[in-house]
Amino acid sequence: MYHVFACKSFDVSSANKQMKKNKISKEEVIKRQLEADKRFNRVSIITFVSILLFLFSFLYIQQYWCELRFKYRMHFMYGKILPPDWVCMNGNELEPHITNRITLNELPYFVCSDGCYDWFSNNYQSCGFAKDTITGKLINKAKAVIGLQSKNKPEVVYFETKASFLKYYSQHEK
Ligand SMILES: [Zn+2]
Image (cartoon, rainbow, N blue to C red; front, side):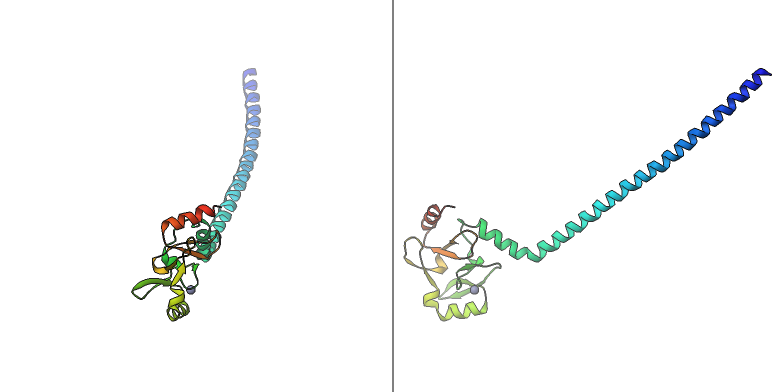
């Protein structure tokens, strides 16, 4: 009899304990769920903002690509030989876009627009030639070595030889 009672009483208390445990673990589950939700929300927001930032920078770069490249070239091409089709030989400037090759007097020149072509071809005797920046000798732009006059500016200078070119940049080291 005693044994049965004892056994029963043990059963009751263990059931109570079990119930308490269940209650705690339920609260724990809800709490964990809420934390997981919070974490998920945080990750979602970060992902969303990252995608948005990426999209905006992509659009910005696409929109201003030419301008950015132009600025980059004005800075980093200083002291380097410029390809002639980056230059308008009428305006004597580096251009944001590739310039048009024209042939005058059987020599290749490069201009940025129809207007520049007209002016250049009508004034060939003055526009087709330039002074070597170091020696002062008159040279044909079609055969010149071309470089930037100064950093971060589009104006170009012409040289008869690579030696003149190198001398100019050793004198104007920045
Ligand atoms: Zn031009």
